[in-house]
Image 1: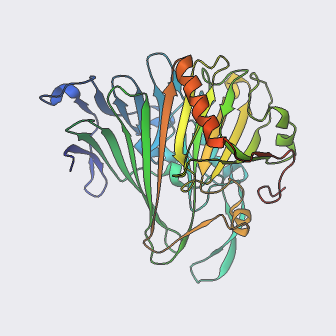
Image 2: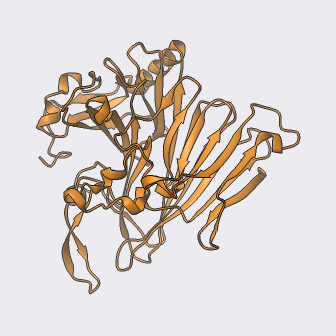
Length: 398
């Protein structure tokens, strides 16, 4: 059994919060390897006042985690390349300033600027009406706002964890409770980890139904990339089993669904729904490459855990947020009623759990990208790939 050093940074149950904290590899006698640092601090000023950040600098890549925003990842960067995007929302907005029901259910966007933002947990799609049970047990119609609530729930408990023996895993573990009376209540335990000297980091999530009765679960990882990975001529590399446009607007771009254009003022978003091929263990990999295929951002995960994949293209002017979202999910970001009708909404038993594992990486030379292309091609070898030119009613409500 591996041994670990642990330190609690935030514990809402005990009213404990370290305003600032730093841990370095130099603190560990006998450690030999790349020098690393974990740093916790609290932002001040404007709408980000009171937001806690934890940075893991593994000596090669720095990963910035936001416990205050549901354990999202703000960005990850090396000395030369940053993974993330430049949102018009410049601050790391405290959830107190995000009003989900505003703008017809689009209020979630007032805090949206992370590299990795979870959507869910009881719903995660487009705003729309759905039927729920009220406090008397009667059915009632309610508006479910965009992308759910988990991204705007502060972690109740956060700790750092360092493995004391090789490979010396560095981790931040956060516990988030998204609970209501007379409704679905979930706990999320998220572990963001990396190894010293690595250009990868992992996200392991365990979602628990805190109630005694079954609850509907939807979970989507909104993984967002802008420059330098995204520019005119950038491409998505993926082992495609199936792809279709979400609607007529996306249909206009089917000739170039897997590539990107330059920033364009007034660009209206396009979305594509995919299923991906995987290996015999259900593992798949995809990547966004720069035009010269010198750089690639990779995502590895299990299609058994996250069977749906969505591409969000928003190649608007840079000042308006030039970005693409690569989004593994339990289902697609349609209204929950539609996804339920197609049998894709998970019913999690009382006190049941659901686990996901994703690994995010950065490749920084052409040889690494070429090897990745071969790996992706091998996942599709001898398998059917269906490209639909029009929205498919099995996936698209329009």
